Length: 367
Image 1 (cartoon, rainbow, N blue to C red):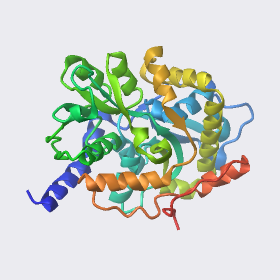
Image 2 (spheres, one colour; image 1 turned 45 degrees about the vertical axis):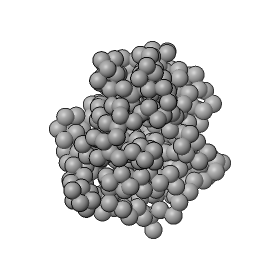
Image 3 (cartoon, rainbow, N blue to C red; image 1 turned 90 degrees about the horizontal axis):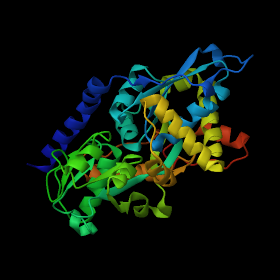
Image 4 (cartoon, rainbow, N blue to C red; image 1 turned 60 degrees about the vertical axis):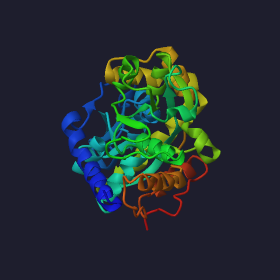
């Protein structure tokens, strides 16, 4: 098939993903109310707004959102405006919720943010801050795969066609000189798109030989006898790359800038607390996971997973551009125009007030 036809077919598949995932997952489940998020006596609503709807995943790479909800940092910054959480399983469904107005602000990976921005011709979202770097690993069955070259010919799971880890693995495979059809996943290595919730069972059953996945899924595989063959951080300059951003509906940002600023203040305070109190923060994230999903992570999974993630206010904008280039090279995205995807003015205002260094948009800021 000609490359242009393959690319069009690939884009068509990706374009359908939000609707498919939305049908499976809905707009996210509401998190349980917890004691840390109570409104302080005498607090006032910001801009008279009753609530702000905040989306995030039940992943440790979304630890800022988990800890911020659990410890009440967002609610404290928002006063009497309620921090109303919604939990998602995948980026496309969160983007769909953002586009429909079902959420206002969200924590999300770079690939869904890029796809959401480009598909709306730059009209529906802005990236307004960073949250996390790292926390992604290639974990394999050590009986079947003993070196990187042994990955060829094996079955490797990624979370979803076109998601951040899928793009990263396809790019890495291409750099090894291996050919893989991006849509079917077939080629010199077979890519199996598998939800993070079921990947550990797929590994145990032997239906996949390894997985390129975020935390805590990577550490769950290690607990099942898997071996970390590659930490994605080792592939990036300074071992830093964006894994989670903060996004907002442009309309909401325009209408409620003070509310957006308050959420960002809560995020900055959360990251500051996480980095100063890593053990307490790890416990808080796990407690929120338990409240959101009904199940906490065991120590053998939680401890190594948490150590591999860096929490940062910096969106690491230059790495977002590189990840977009990887998606283009993989045949999963036409060359995007990312000019205007960032609006870091509200975050930098918060950082200046905190006496912290401001962050850069790599020339991709809103004009």
